[in-house]
Length: 101
Image (cartoon, rainbow, N blue to C red; front, top):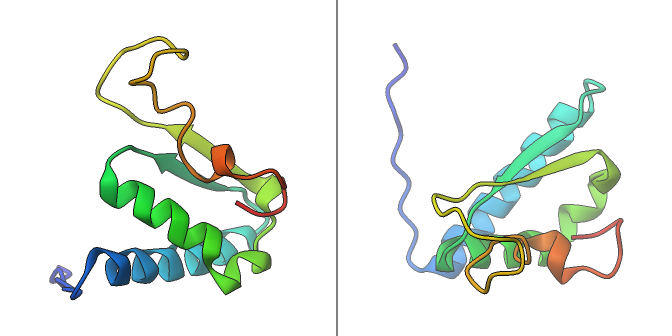
């Protein structure tokens, strides 16, 4: 049995940078096997901070963003045009360049 490891960070920004680094590394590993990477985007302050950290990561260029599948996860059921919808959040909504989040 694997024992879980708890990592603590001094600020939300440092947490987001650590998550972004692990996420990009994992996605590169997945893509190296020929599979697309899948990312389920959720909302909330820390999620938005993580999305920004990925978009600002110097390592983001190592990914083929055309082979990253984005999924929206949300506990709410609202229309796409609702202000509460997450369809307009995440790295793809902030990007004008499809090769970079």
